[in-house]
Length: 205
Image (cartoon, rainbow, N blue to C red):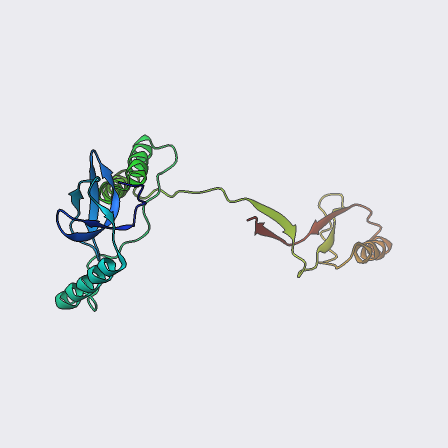
């Protein structure tokens, strides 16, 4: 048999059927019926690429079978989501993920599904309630849509701070002007100044 990529439609003369090439298991090639169904094993030395006529005939037969069974309008019994991802640091997750990777590389869809089921079952049992956090690179930048704020608080006083404040100001000069005026009125000279701005996190691709 010449090199055949998984997903190629081939003809099996022993069964007189066209199937989707899935890979090999030992000395046998694994084929799946067009449109889905139970896989079967074929002799790699006998199978060949299906002709255009054979592909068309197999596609028509699969469409007729689906129509007969009502599969064209039926809702799937199980909605399949994305495959589960291993939890970092878990040996069992890593072992099942490796098993899935080997099955995928070998084109063994059944074994790949089995590994997904086992991994999902393990995570429901052993990782229930745990949340997996992944590091996302980001940059913190000043929000250009919001102005920074400057403020001064008078902390002069013998027994307690004065407590007077300039309130949020748009520029340092405004704070200094308030300080001069407050000192002139009270003779207080000690202030605590603060600066505040707004920042946003931008995720890096």
